[in-house]
Image (cartoon, rainbow, N blue to C red; front, top):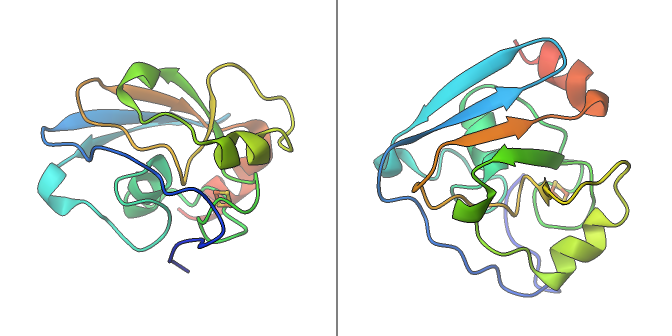
Length: 137
Ligand code: FES
């Protein structure tokens, strides 16, 4: 499912113009994904070039109950490295994040977090997403 949510603030994000890597860490494994800017967006779910878009393009099915339109908190991830290269979270994203369990200062919604490619990212996929991530292999 793709699309946007007309009831929330527009996300302002700069899509990557240079190659970079995103390392996804799940409780069981680590997967490094090479990002090629010309391939963005990888699909129609989440903001173009978002962490969710990248994950799904790489075959990692991070939970995304609302379809990537900032209307749930199931796509919560922790950006361990490279957070400075991502767009600012909107108030709507922060409101949704408040509903997620175990949020940290590096928490983001994967569908709203768009890296600009100036840094490599390390993303921790929390424990509660591990079954879905595993099943997608
Ligand atoms: S998938 Fe619902 S907020 Fe990201």
